[in-house]
Length: 102
Image (cartoon, rainbow, N blue to C red; front, side, top):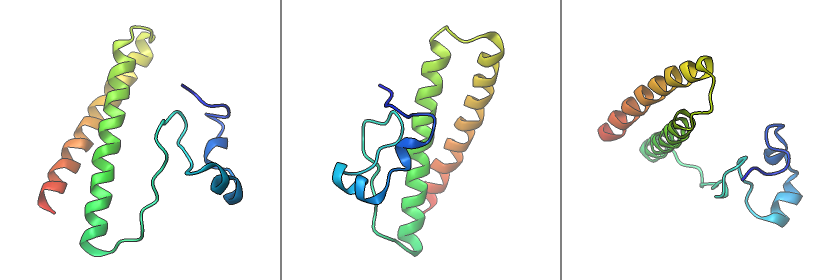
């Protein structure tokens, strides 16, 4: 479900006071609020960063797969989506391997 203002950056550009009144900000179309973590350093930062990358790439793959399977894309866009999917899958594999080494 898209929220008003999605695609124009409004959802992420609310004032601090407005955000505090309404709770945590949300990414466009994301049903879960963005989570603000306390600052980390060293190994804790590395693990948190790589975990976030793995999650983001998994999320991207799910959405790409959904769009590819929809059958509503033009052949040109479908080709671009498949190329993008291959790149995201490769990045996910690298991030997963990196996470295993931390």
